[in-house]
Image (tube, rainbow, N blue to C red; front, side, top):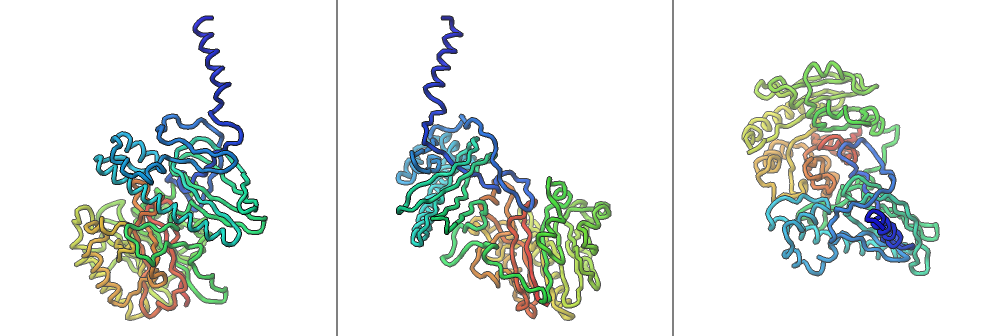
Length: 499
């Protein structure tokens, strides 16, 4: 027998002995979050199973799947070994730490002490989630059902749909799990049926429904628009619906595959759309003057001091009585940050407040000039009729409005100077933060930095607002966040005002 024949015989023998290293009756089931399928995402999307492929063989040996016979067990990513022995993290090499963090979808740069700290934080978070899942399971079992919630962050390239039946308290429980690939972020949606009478669903692709905050208060809860929005008003109730969105470059947004401004309008059914940070020039406006069919009234302002910068717009299917651009102060109006539209019962001001910038270079201008001028302008308008100010106001007012308050004390948007200015020039002048009034203990963000995938973990800021004159605050039916609309580092916010 020559060398080639020997190799062929050995390889065939290996395949017969170890077919994928799995025995009949063993199941590995996962489902990737639809939201982790890439950064380019439209209003809604759904994950679809793809063909099975080989598992990633570059995975560290530390992360081996835990598989049990005659049951459904999620994949272990090696973190379980650290739960009871966190001191073993200190003994890991830098390479082991980096491999572990990358395998769990986290950044792996920095000194060893930083990597150790990051991994310990992940383990602590996993312990907390496990406890919460156990509590939820106990509560469900009390009503005769069982819901299993398991998470994994192991990269897998297999796609499989399995339906398994297990026995719990002598009742059949059917668990469906589906796997699709293309991201490190892995999560599950598990539907449980007991005697075909009760169906419970635990979605894991809505990160905004998870309380994400460094130091949350006991009574704080995450914002969930599916459960926290009031019923829709009857058709005979006169009202106006507004939507506001910092699009972070309108041209780039419109180029995204599948994005449709018309679909957004049809889904949200708003009367007026306010945009900030359009980054358009006057020549661009001419090409997209009528952005959405049925919304024939559009008013755009562009930066003249720096082309392709800032910019704001109001797009409406209701014709306003009058329109004004800027504050009427030359020093403030060259960056195209403000559009005011007058309607029958209110003024609508769409604004993009200046960011204090890197190194807080514009902090003084922002707090001592811009905010003061904008406040005076709003109070002057208010002498005629109530005012609604909306847009990216570039300030997380309270600690509840930012994921990591302690780490951002000197970051633009959360300095004490900006927060005090926000209080002094707007809230103390009689303008009401409608979202906070409606949801006093709710953590809801509207901005997530693109770096490090912060939107997937809901580590964000609330920078976008609807502020209204106190005289119409009680007419606000709903002030809400639309966190599932992607395409920008901000998400839209909405307001329903009864007239």
